[in-house]
Each structure stands twice: as C-alpha cells, then as structure tokens.
Image 1 (cartoon, rainbow, N blue to C red):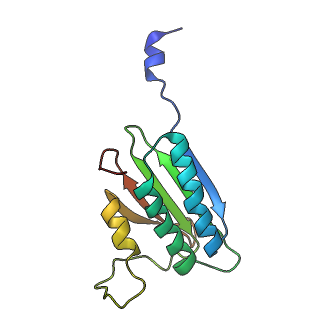
Image 2 (cartoon, rainbow, N blue to C red):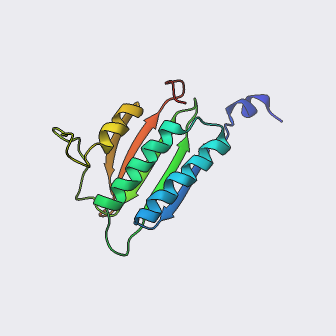
Image 3 (cartoon, rainbow, N blue to C red):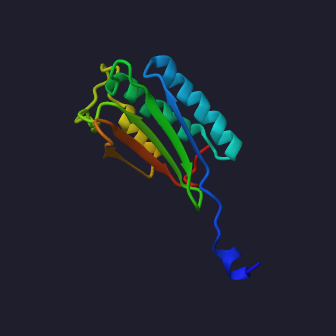
Length: 144
C-alpha cells in the first residue's frame, strides 16, 4: 500500500439528512432527531438543537406549501464545524431579521436566536422554488 496515498484519503463528512412533514409535529421531530444525532456524534447540542428548532419552525410557519415536506440536514465538517440546513418549498419567502421586536409581539425572534448562537447563517435559493436556510456553528464557542 502506498503511504502517500493513505495520507490523502479523508473520511466522509458525517451527515444526517431527513425529510419531514411541514407540520408542527414535523418541526418537533426535527428537533428531537437532531438532538439524538448530535449526541451520537458527541457534539454539544443545546444551542445547536435550539437553532434546528427555530429553522424547522420557520419552515413550517413560513415555508409551507400544502403537500410538500421540508428537509433537515446536519453536516459535521472537518475541524468540527456543524452546518445545519433546513430546506422548504417557499423560495419566494426569504427570511430576514425583523426591524424591531416589541415585548408584546409573540413571534419574530427566531432569526435573532439563530444569529446569536450561530457563527454565521444565510439563505441559498433553489433548486426550483425551494430555499435552504443554513447556520454554521464552530466548536468551542462555549456551547453547553
């Protein structure tokens, strides 16, 4: 066996991808499955699970198209950075941070929470009418 070749081989990126119904139950299941998967990988999960919960909830509330599901993907990149992706069927509804949120409003804080926990987040369009909202979390940011 060629030792130089062995040094170039890298393990596949650990990933978890699942399609879920665009319902409140599907969003709850996304959170629970993410918690279990991150635990299996040995990744601290409290803040990551909160990000999954917010993105899945947004997919169900704002990205739902009757009869279409949403997709959750977790990818553990080299160096330990976790990438969370939630893809829904409403590419025409791009999420944005609220201008202001008052104490009386019940919603509107989800992306503020994502922004607080993630190192970076964004939105990718496509394929087709879909969009993917993603967040990346690097190891060692003080997550519990």
